[in-house]
Length: 309
Length: 309
Image (cartoon, rainbow over all chains, first blue to last red; front, top):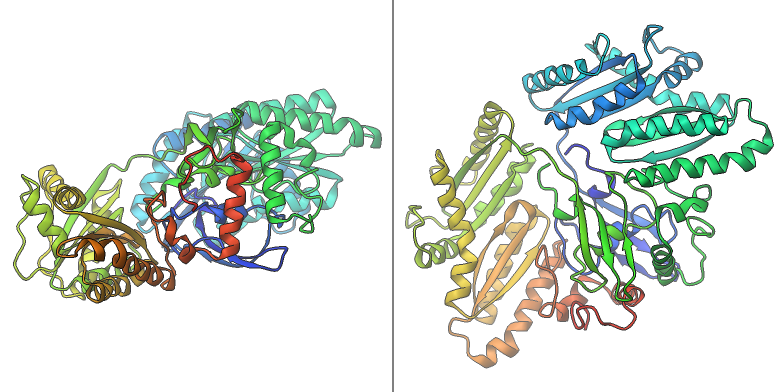
């Protein structure tokens, strides 16, 4: 299964409640319409409803083959435009990652041993993987992807022929966060929108950055519409960073919601995003969720202060 | 995506609450870790928490081809043993339906125009479909499935070559419930277990039937571990049907839970299964779920009497 999200693989949970009582949320089955879906209610609840002590996952067969390609673009907006075009062509890649030029540069500058060459004119990369059990089918899928990519002014596409080359591409992608986080004061936003709205999101983030005077490094799981926006402190003074930037972040999240998305795709809310929950949910929805919290944890002893103000 | 369940395709819901207030449960995105998962909490809640007025689904490309085969078995237990063996061989069919002999006979006897020939010795059918974009890959998958099936004393396998033949097989499968329901007083149980436990479930259902003196017609979505057990009134008198049978049904559901399953795979609880909820959930879990019901519907005006006693 491709582009399934983790929660869809979670079938059943053993949960210790704050009262010390233990429940199983569901059953070890693929289909379940017995009572309310506590399994998915607990999944992603950030430890605020109960302590998960056992998880039953659904497993799927490991695909035998995968092919990985690197597509360089002369425009970051064109790169994210290509993302939904590939899905619209009927192809469902197993991974589709986006890196804007700054993200590539941070990774190459600060992390050793990434042997990926990047031309000066390149403004973004898409890393695209397809997987399956039949190599020829995957080759055909890659050909179709290449056809689509050509329509978005893509430069020459690199196929990772060896496991070493594959490792280099994945290392570049995976090193961005590390590079940014160890070499700058930063804030990471975990924006998510319908994937066809990625171009509007990326353009909007840059515009908001110009308005508030911050630099952002954007990259992430473009196939999921999930764009990580790392905001770099750079030349901002402490006053701007502490008191002005949150308004800029608020505008980014308002844009996400306006585009049909929300304020966290995979990182969760925790301490740092809870002040933005009013953008994602109306008063009634937040009130309902807080009441659910009280049903499970009437004394508020589980991860106090997280998600809810 | 194969063997995904409906809830996994539901991304966002507009819900009218019993207070008249309106919420959206999530966002129109594939990944969402913002607050609690109200979307999946509401999905399958049988109208007891709110009225769903809009649904945002995730769509996947329609596969270009499918192949359909009918595998007759001389033993119903062998047929359901073959089910998990096919998945273990790395094949994920898009459909895998089971019919025991009685189910086949009810369909052929009471529904007109099903042109499927069945030998006297055949005790069960599996209807197996694979789908995808490459016919050759599908042919290979079918060959692999046939290899597996041979290990379970399968008779000659029929490939549905034409759309007419496919329609006939699906009509046979889909007519079972109709045939039973229009020609007998019946109760339908919607059992579900991990698919590897189907043989134990089927054998157990028959044993419980012998103990309580009822006949059952078993069929359903074997690939999901979801076995419909249609209990026929047959020669049971009203006293047995009303007062003794429920204990037999209780034993069936206890067996499901013992095997890692639960009491409804897809039909839900409604009025008729709510007396068995104590088998699926312990006291604390039922209490939590009832409190969630009260959070959404404090006056109990939504589908009163459903799911909860």
